[in-house]
Length: 109
Length: 115
Image (tube, rainbow over all chains, first blue to last red; front, side, top):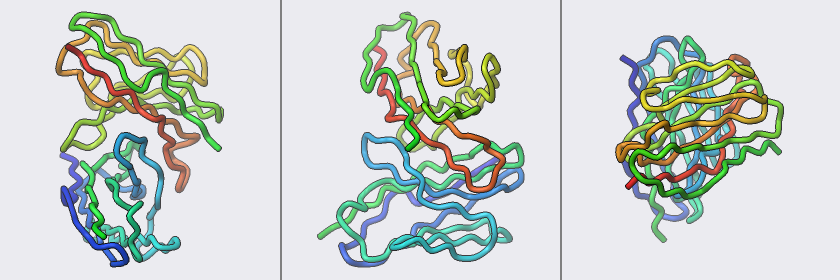
């Protein structure tokens, strides 16, 4: 079957760095997405990786290793507004998105 | 900016009622999706549509049906609501899912409670 694993919850301190991991086993691979979802709101797109390596976008970076079925989202200089759930999703061979359950990130002052 | 709107943010219905959830997007996207989101589970695909009057079952279509009469509108129908359909329902749209980094745009969600 298809499976995406992420930690359920993480806690970090304002101003620090946090890494949220995602491992996947899917039928084919056509890209990996990270979304941010604040409580009670819709998910919003953060990043996309299809080739191995690091993609940097401001305070957020996303890394992919296709051979290991692994990705991480790195958040730097954490701010209180980064408190949210972070969803990992993989696009499979049928171009459908398979979603992880999400990681709830709690930022403490 | 792409805008995806859903007819209600919160809805309370009784068991056995017929429920309509509507989604409208304003970016002329061909592909539209209905998901449900429950605590501890990832987004689960109920149905999707890649063109007007076309529909495909997702992972959990049982108890649901959909309608796409116009390109911009995709409706989710619960023929006879049950308590296990209490959930957050999210609509999404995308231009062409096979093209590189095209991401899905989501509506604000409808939190449905069935009593």
